[in-house]
Every structure is written in structure tokens, then in C-alpha cells.
Image (cartoon, rainbow, N blue to C red; front, side, top):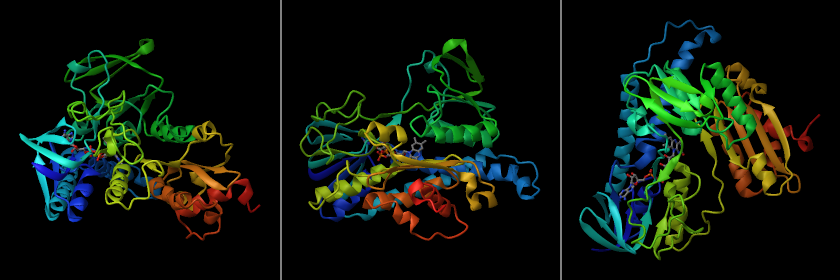
Length: 455
Ligand SMILES: Cc1cc2nc3c(=O)[nH]c(=O)nc-3n(C[C@H](O)[C@H](O)[C@H](O)COP(=O)(O)OP(=O)(O)OC[C@H]3O[C@@H](n4cnc5c(N)ncnc54)[C@H](O)[C@@H]3O)c2cc1C
């Protein structure tokens, strides 16, 4: 069948692209082999943040005495936690279905899509030939080649969110943002938790100060951290899993979560038949305008190299839509992608870390400030954390900001428009901030740079 556009995957870029291109007059087919909405809605952002909220409620209830509030013993009803999560996931998934149904000229085809030739795709036994094919196939958990892993009932991000009982002792392999969110969540649900991380610190791509702040909180909550530890083998069964680490160390727990990264869903895409070049890790190679090596075929979202976040995939859709409609000015290269780990405190960053800034030849002017210096942090007893700003001394432009603290994921957005506009950090200094808010603390961070100090 001849069609204008085929979109493969109903992820965070694919759905809005398919709907908007159809609304703009093109005949579009979108293929989805599993749940509508992809990772974010079904196995990523939505379910994790819903369960993080339950864990947070447990934590506040358990520690209410610090506010002068007496609460009884906290009991976790895991089935209710999971039920709430499932309801919210269903709600978002339904929203995706309605969005697709609403668009004219758009057909949803359920099934696995595979290239059979450049711009020719087979889905559920039907062949589609299109002028434009957009690949939004996403990624899945990477499975590390650890001997014995195949013989134990390990958990991934999807399976762990279906547990109806709190694990007695959860081992989390991987101290990246997914591993950290689950570690704290399950600790707050009452599990004993051990995080095993290969590098020297949690969230190893973030500022060392950020890692140290989070590690302090984790240890304070009773999470055991085993860093600089490479897993050598796994053994065990349904009741106990033992992870053997290099140096003869071992950790035994009741459950094992593997969160060591993601790999793109490109192995069964027929990329070669489609003329689509993949990099050594299987990611689809794209240029700054999302063009793959095959004419008329574009790659967006987690299956392309780059930051794997919903907002990045969503932004891919905006940029590519404009390019396909012939009025695009932005490219995937000239954008800032903020990040947040939804731990408590949250860990957020925009722009460069100090190490990366120096590697790019900057000699940044830096300031740091403890989150606990913010009045609101003291008043709400959320003093854990630290903030850091890097400025280019020549231009006064912000190079990067890292915030560990309450609502850091919100606060980091103060810097986005300033950085996108390319204006001086003085724009933040000259503004007026409501007291008492966390945001006024962010202004204080900028004002603690020597050049803005008020004595
Ligand atoms: C535990 C976890 C927590 C996360 N938390 C956050 C967060 O808080 N904030 C954030 O920004 N990001 C978060 N992410 C990342 C975020 O979920 C992804 O970056 C985002 O979903 C990327 O979307 P995508 O559009 O690239 O692909 P996906 O959402 O993965 O969609 C790809 C779709 O393509 C389908 N598909 C694959 N191959 C084929 C094929 N051949 N034929 C047909 N269909 C196919 C898949 O079934 C899937 O539905 C999290 C991820 C995880 C795992």
C-alpha cells in the first residue's frame, strides 16, 4: 500500500508526529507492537513517579515526628500502591489512544514493523511504501553479560513495578538515575536495599558534589552502597540471589534489580534492508536534522544516540515536524536538554558539568551553596542538597547548573530560558523572587558568584 508517512513506534515522539502530520494533511500509518505510549507511559516516567509519590508519603508519615506530628506505625499495602500506579498508567495510555483516534487520515496498525527495502515496511503481513518513514522504536533494559544471570529471576524496571509484596532485601545493580529512584523507593517501602555500582559514585556523570549529597541522604536512610564493584557472577533462585563481585566480595538479597543502562530496539527492525546505518551500539545514526543514511527515513527518541528522556523525544517531534513542514529553524544539535533524577532530594542539571566545561576549553567561574541555606528548606525540613553554578567569565553566560534539593527538577528551569536566550546571568540577579521560596535560593546561588556579591 502506498502511503505518505509511516511512523514506527508510539513513543513520545512518534505519537505527536503521526497525529500532527495527519492533521496537516498527510496519510499516516503508525505501527505499535506493544502498549500504546511506549516506555514513558507504561514502564518509565509515569509508573515510577507515581510510585515515588507513594514512597514519599510513607517517608513523610514515618518521619512526621520531626514536624511535631505523631503518626502511628506505617504499613505499606503494596497491592494498593501498584493498583494506583496501574490506574494512572491506564489513564495516560487511554489518552494516547484518544489522541490517535482523533486525528484524521491516521491509521494505527498493531504489530511489529520491519523494513524490507528502503522506505518499505511490513507490518502485520501488510507492506507499506511511504515517502517518509519515522523510526521511534525506543530502547529496552540492557542485559549485562554476567554469568548466571539467565538462571536467576532478576527484575527489570517493568517487572519490579508489578511486585505485590515488598522485597525483603533488594539488590540494585546500577547506580544511575533509574537504579537510584528504585533504590530509595523500595527502601521507603520498607525493604533492605543494597546498591552495587561499578564506578566510584552514584550518578557518576553528574557533579561529584551532587553524587556526594545524594549518597549522604541514601546512607542516612539506611541504603547500603557498594561502589567500585564489578559484578562477576550471579547465582541463586526464587528465594535468594547472590551477586559475586570482583575482589571476592559478595552480596545476597531476596531480589535483584538490573538497571545498568538501555539498548535500542533496532535488532529486529530490518535496518540493513532499509538502508539504515546503525552505530556500534545499535543506535540509529542521524544527522542534525534527524536524517538517517536512508533517504526519507528519520530517527527520533531513544533509538538515536543522545540523552534518553521523554522531554528530549518530545522535543525531537517538535523539531522534526517543523523540518518536514518546511519551516524548521532548530536542529537536534542546538538545544539544551535538562535532566532530573526523581530521588528525594531530586538531582537536576542543565548544561555542562565542571569537568565537561573544562574539557571544552572553558575556565569557568564557579559558586556552590548548600541547599540548607535556603530559608524555605529550613522551614520545610528539606535541607539536604547542594547547588553549583558555572559561568563563562568572558561572557557572563551560564555554562551549567547542578541542583540537588527539594524540587530541583522545577528549579532547574529558571536557567533554561536564560541559557537559550544567551543572556548574562545578571538577568537572574536583577529579578525579584518571592520570599520564602526555594527559587530565591537559586538567585542567592547566582549572587554568590564573586562578580555579583553584594558584600
Ligand atoms: C524506569 C524509567 C524511568 C524513566 N523516567 C523518566 C523520567 O522521569 N523523565 C524522563 O524524561 N524520561 C524518563 N525515562 C526515559 C523515557 O521513558 C524515554 O526516554 C522515553 O519514553 C523515550 O521515548 P521514545 O519515544 O524514544 O521511545 P519509547 O517510548 O520507548 O517508544 C517506542 C515504542 O516503539 C515500539 N516498537 C519498538 N520496535 C517496534 C517495531 N519494530 N514495530 C512496532 N513498534 C515497535 C515499542 O513497543 C514502544 O512502544 C525513564 C525510563 C525508564 C526505563
